[in-house]
Image 1 (cartoon, rainbow, N blue to C red):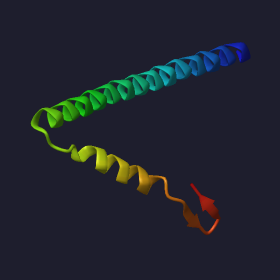
Image 2 (tube, rainbow, N blue to C red):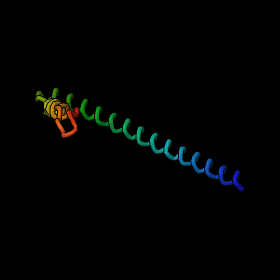
Image 3 (cartoon, rainbow, N blue to C red):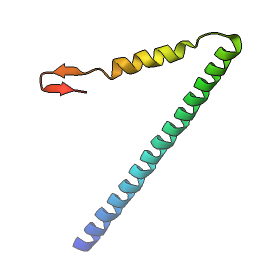
Image 4 (cartoon, rainbow, N blue to C red):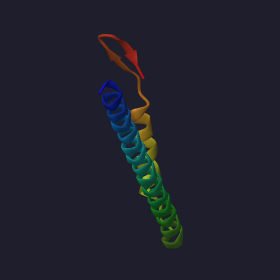
Amino acid sequence: MRTVVIQLALLLLAVLEIVAGLLAGSVALASLITEAVARAASAGTLSFARWVGADPVSLRLRDELAAVLSTTITSTGGTTR
């Protein structure tokens, strides 16, 4: 009886591991797809801005957002970056 319970527990853990791996792989794939779409949209924006002779706003926005996100925040526990 004890070996049956151990085998069932190992089977359950193996199934959970497979499901977690599939979930992690799906999230990684979705991340790659959204990054590719974002890069394509950025390239399209830049080429359109060049075509009409305008300054792309997204570059300035991207730099400002990067500056905000890279600032150092001081918390009660110390400095967090």
